[in-house]
Image (cartoon, rainbow, N blue to C red; front, side, top):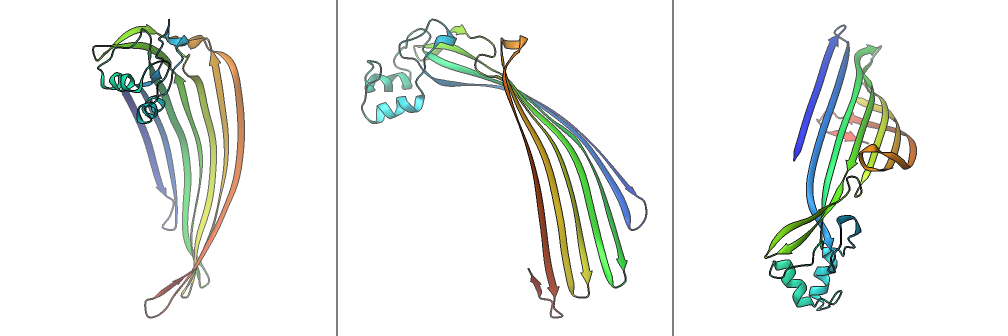
Length: 239
């Protein structure tokens, strides 16, 4: 199951022939829940949260190397994968990957073009403030295989297979200029980003008492420049 909503608002304002402003506001919301099997407990389990699984990649490796696992021969492991052999109660782990996301922000920009003496400039810059989040509320369920079909045995505790929120707050600023003089063009620019990350893990399902959290703040400057020369023959040299 997937749901997605998006809203984008744009505004452009030309103050003059050489100066303009832009504004963009956006909001994205996305929710999805998909199920996948995480592995198998060949001995079975009393409930989904006590299931002690072995990954399917290990099962496939046992089949390929003709090895047994937990007293089950490689040939029987192969029959389990093909649906020919029934499994114990509470043996197959199925996970609900229930997650919600959002990203939102606003960006303001400007552009200016003009000349100072014999030098022309095409200057632009912007600032963007952005926030996004991922919210996980996942659970495991246990199944058994009967006559090639999965039969539900137990629905696990909501949040036991992933109960956390990851957040990011970012501010980005950049300025860029294209400077032209005769056949020469010089393009200096610089970008700055400040990104604050936070992850909070919870206990107790939807009631959510904090288990632990961690934060990280990263700041980075990204300068850059380019230069080019246009020959009369139409050839351009870049550096």
